[in-house]
Image 1 (cartoon, rainbow, N blue to C red):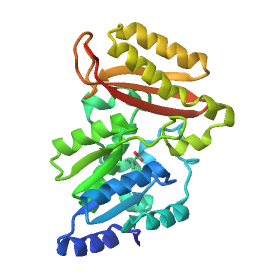
Image 2 (image 1 turned 90 degrees about the vertical axis):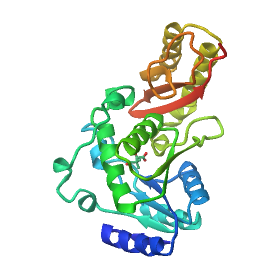
Image 3 (image 1 turned 135 degrees about the vertical axis):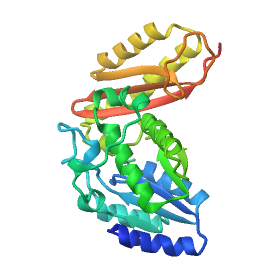
Image 4 (image 1 turned 180 degrees about the vertical axis):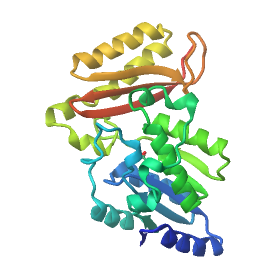
Length: 283
Ligand code: PAF
């Protein structure tokens, strides 16, 4: 596996591959890679000849009181594992390389219909930072295919909207959420959990299944959401939101047999966990 630390090095290698008619697949990450990331690499490989991964802990998507400083950084172990997984090129830019005019002077991006709801409501500026860094990476890598995890459901919806609206010629693919044996969605942040918190963490996914089952069977959304929040709060979660939306994240309509997604974000101590479940009501 080759490693590029600058945009110039990255473009030189990708230019060579493009000249040889290769299709480029891309997996952007913030590192501290786990099995979920490697499934994205494998998916990218299925649609491309060469796979590029980036590792960049992006400061512009963290709020002032969030975990940017303590976000786990394990670049050597990540590089070794990416190499074994058959990744062809690792892009490891510095903050200055990604934000040559400074993070504070960057061009900002907004998807007004999608960034103010759900995670965006409690993490102001987060999706601006995600869109900003992903659009830069897309411009630098110019991939044919990019793969993102469906665990970050709202992020994926926003990035699809951005790609369509800005006419990036990129096939954005979602990859199924990788889970631990007890159902907890894999995340680099799971390692912050104490053993006691880790034991209750799978309740998020269990609650989403419970919620989707009831709503799918025709129970009222508002009352069921209230009960779902209470289940999580009783187990010690500080609930940010539990929601049922249409699959495109527009508000769900009672009694309509549309594809829906149940989503939750909740904290255990300082660790914020998210998860989602797509379902269709049997109305
Ligand atoms: O999902 C992530 O890991 C990040 O939000 C991403 C897409 C790599 C942008 O920094």
